[in-house]
Length: 93
Image 1 (cartoon, one colour):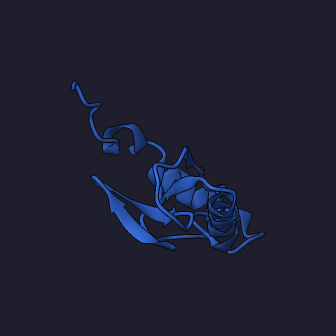
Image 2: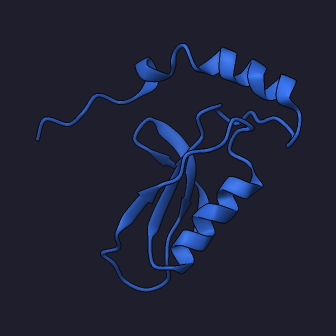
């Protein structure tokens, strides 16, 4: 199963293997184009191998077309400076 999902305050794409867990988990980080079909495909392929996968949507739903370096660079400039502040605080449990 794969879908767009919310993990705490972070939105992204999750892919889960069939069957009952627990499963080992991976985080797949998008390329500078954004959360595109290639990143989702990588997540699904890891799920097919038995991993629970989450790919965070760092650009909040925006993406650049593959090969459009100017648009990708603009997204990096837009979102990179605030990225650390957008991460949830670590749990102290």
